[in-house]
Length: 394
Image (tube, rainbow, N blue to C red):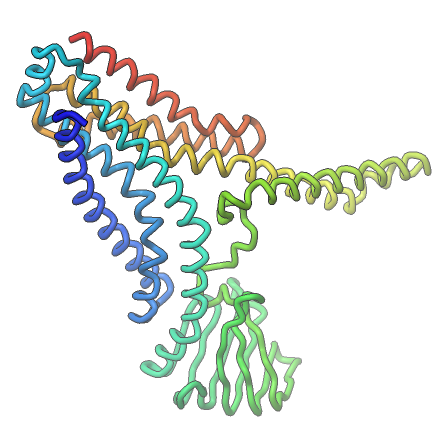
């Protein structure tokens, strides 16, 4: 490794590590404040969330900070005429740009891994922690205020003894204040059933009232209410956006089988109805339901096909940003890195991300093949290679 390569890598590494640490810390704090505000989390729960938020924060922080680092290093080198000095020695600017590209490849692979970790491990961990904390949050609020109100659910108690609610009064209604249910009991305990996505009240010696006509006495019984009443988090199941990359191929194979089974089922039913002369039966609501189920299966298949391409495209945005940022910083010959960063980042913000979102949406719907997700990356690489060629000819 020659002197120039070591120098560029050292400068990039110092600025990148400092900036990515700062940005990640800031994004983790913003995320935690947002979750704490939305979910009324306790301090202990917030601390439990920190490890699970770091991968998501890194996914957003790495591409921006790597571009920021490139703008600082190459902009300062060009502004101080170091690039001119290197060219006067007969050394191509490519020798200066190459170390940045090498770092970008490594960071892109790492970002793909972190992206996969964030959606498969981070989201699941956040969901589990918040669900487990739901009952703790309710107990904490009831113990300090004597009442808990969130969305359609309201709870009042005379007191809290350990994990027991003393004479709770529970009300639940829909958005229009209809279908009001009132629950009263001498004692109650709360727990979360994550598998059923339910908030479970263990009631003793209570009553359930619904409207003016229904009143039911309860000795000891578990009453389930939707967990969505107290938290905005919902179970992700086997959503493609939450699956690790290693499971995508197997899940896609299974989904293809489900699509084929539904298509065969519809074909057989249609054939029987036509042979039997039941042409009108094809227009019945049962057919609309079956066709809708087929559409849902096909849509999930397209999502499974798109997701790996999206994660790799997101990860390799680091490489694309450096391919554009490095030669542009050299070409501008300014030591004011904020100007360079703005000139680089604003076009990327206005061009790359809209193209990425467009490719993802069209691929999910099946209108375009999955590799179209890489359209934004390809555009940036094309612009970057043109800039590198222009810089080398100066």
